[in-house]
Every structure is written in C-alpha cells, then in structure tokens.
Image 1 (cartoon, rainbow, N blue to C red):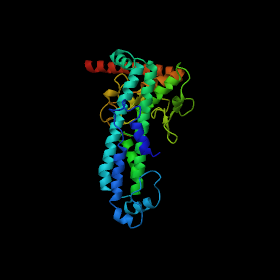
Image 2: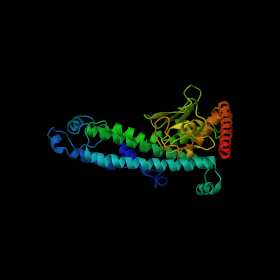
Image 3: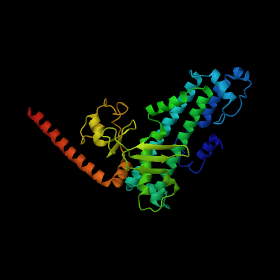
Image 4: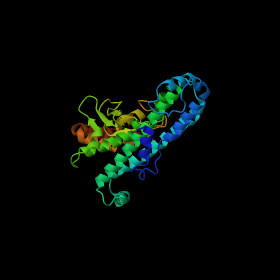
Length: 344
C-alpha cells in the first residue's frame, strides 16, 4: 500500500477523535504542489516521451525522474520554495507544539495524579485502569509523532526526486536548527523514559509495544533506544556534553540539548539555587551555541526517575555532590552580599 493511503487511514482511524485538535502533515496537498511543479515542464519532458501523469511515489524511479532532473536541477524552484517549504515548516512547527503540550500534560498526570486535572482525567475514563489510560495516551502520541515524521521524510524525498536536488535533505538540517525535527524532540525522550519506567515497574509482563523502548546505562556510552518502524531506529545519548558523565537531574534547553542541571547552570553563569530561569539572555548552549535557550529549560522528570531507578548508587552520590555544591554556593553568595552591604 502506498504511504499516502496508509497515512490517510491513520488520520481517520481509531485515534481520530483524540487527535482532532492536533495538526498533521498535509501530505496530499504537498504532493499536489510537487505535481504542479512537474507539470510546468510538460512541454520539454513530453518531448522526451516520458509519461507525465504517473502517480508520484517512492517507486517512481526511471525515465521520468531522469528527464525531470535535466529541467529542474539543484537550482531553486521559486514555486516550491514559496509554497512547499513554507507550508511544511508551518505544519512541522504546529505538530511539534501539539506533541510538546500533550506529552507535558500526560507526564504531569503520571508524576502527580492528584488535583482537579487528574480527577477530570479519571472521570472521562472511569471504566479503565489509571495506568492503562496513561499507557494508551502515550502510545497514541508516539504513533502521532512517528507517522508525521515519516510523512515529512517521504515528502522531502519526493521533493528531491522531482527536482533532482538535495534541498530536501538540507531542509531536514534546517528543521533541526529551528528545533522542529520531531524525532529529536526532548519530549520524545521523556515519552520513551515514561515507557521504560513502566517496563521496570510491577505492572507485569510488558507487551510488544514496550519492546520498542530500551535503555542501556551499563556501558561507557549510556543510551536510550527507540524503534519507530522497521527502517527507523534512533539512539539518544544520555551523556552530558559538559561533564561527559551520565546525566544527573537532567534539563533540556529550548534548543533540545540535554545537560545536568549543575552543568547547565555553570555554562549559563548562574548559581544552582538561582536556577536556569535566571540565566542571561546572551548565554549560549555549550553544544550548538544558540542564545536565549536557558529561559525555557525543562526539567526531564521521567528521565530523572529512570536514572534514579537504574543507577541508584551513582544517583545518590551525584545528589550528595549537588547538594554540597548548592550549600557552598549559597553561603558564598550571601557572604558576598553581606560584605557589599557593609561596604567592604
């Protein structure tokens, strides 16, 4: 079955009501943009005897694509640049925002199931076990981000086929720069940690879906692995880029990079007790050098819980070190404030 048909079935499947307010890739609309770009060269291509009306799909490799590459090489195509990439950027941004907000709410309910929000959630699903509700919601979000990520990958591949270019691959790099690359989202790492934490709980034998998530903290390079499909498998490093050790009390900056809280505070030139929210605007990410990324840093609670449960001795030692450093920084800070107030 062609991916376009599979994607359409997904959008109108069992999860339609759950995702009715969520954005998705307008796959068919973007294909029409590419088709119109191809048709504008009909006179030249038909002169070579190529069937121009064949459906555009991953298997369409041959004379048509050879002819297309002659008339639409690596140069810019104003029509596609304006319509195609602008639309895809907008859709990817909306999908990333929707995924972030839904995962944030899900994990908030998992970590703190009390309060009015938790009560209303359980009331809506009054005939289901609370854990099962969370697991199903998480699975729906995982499928949501997977299908849209594959749709973006497919449509960018089609763009390069039509234009005989590498602009589609370049656009994927731009998505990472704009922090809308779906499979690199720190919220996806949180969702993966959520499932690994459930796997290690006393809920019984995990199902097949849980086997898509695994975590290896025993080696010198701790990683979390997620399997999205038969052809897509990602490894996410759990090593802090500053201290080069396993993450502790991890925070994700708005650029998506993960650091220990103490390391991130040090990079931003703020004290531990002040927190990352007080970082100056000009502070840069130690990895990508982006500015203004500390103000919206997010505490990775599920990942922190995973590391706490899987590396208990390491986690306790790092906790003692962080508390000792915080006490020292606080004491030195107020001592300096007192000296300043007294005029010394």
